[in-house]
Image 1 (cartoon, one colour):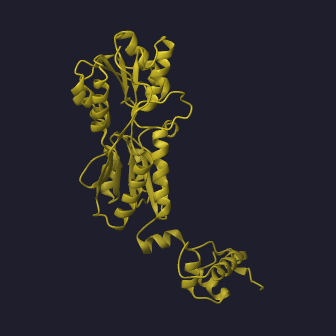
Image 2 (cartoon, one colour):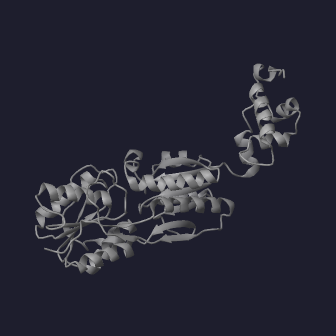
Image 3 (cartoon, one colour):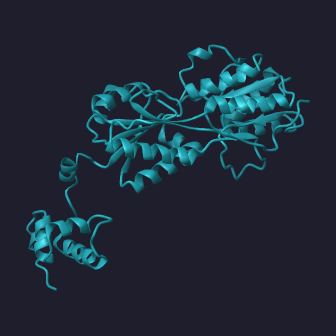
Length: 362
């Protein structure tokens, strides 16, 4: 079949009507051919796409399509820290994997946004021009105050993973405080009384030593991150004499430095309860460096239930469904794109994982 390529050569963009005329089909058939599904045979789709390729037609204009449908097919995903740090953490990776799968199934593209509680005016102006159908916060408890207000101003539907929380934001949360309370009960049943807590950092982007070792309930009401605060409260209720130290970051190196600070200031500590598994991994390294046997001399627990294949020990921890919460956030976004009033609040439970790092108090 000979095709006239003049429409490609004369500098003008080929149109869907030209493709329909040259392929001897209707415009609606051409439109169906460019979709991933629809009432069109594989042979007809192949024929139409071949004709479109030869005349230089690349598909329906996305802007025109969005004006007609009222949707751009783009979902923004806001992350509260630098991208390099966020994707260096298995917690974020597993959540994002579930989220991307759910959005892909619904035909939505994902746009990553690096944001925080305070967003400068230039960033706000730039974000206000991005045509988003929905905005998902992978906050892990961090606030996004100004970005939330910007989304409200532009009528963008929102979903928060562990926050931010509001009546007009669909949410996916974990029973953090209850899970940590269950773990603390188990630790208490092993006879532990001298407890140290490795607290997740509230200082995103900070580079420096860990914070001071302080009583666990010190200024607890001033902690803005509800995830961190809830887990601390759960331990404080069972162990009011416990102490805590804020790690400089959320990784194992920060956990090791913070655990050293705990053990140096409080050598009688018999158990370290870390607020995530990577901090717990660092505590294991600190114990080994100090000549302490785990769990004979020092017990260590984590939180998250991460798959850490490089870790030689089986960590005692609380597991949360990280990938499933990501999928859930994606499904909620799909629902509110279809119906902005379909706000839902989903809560996942945690489960105890009995590893080999918790034993009876010495």
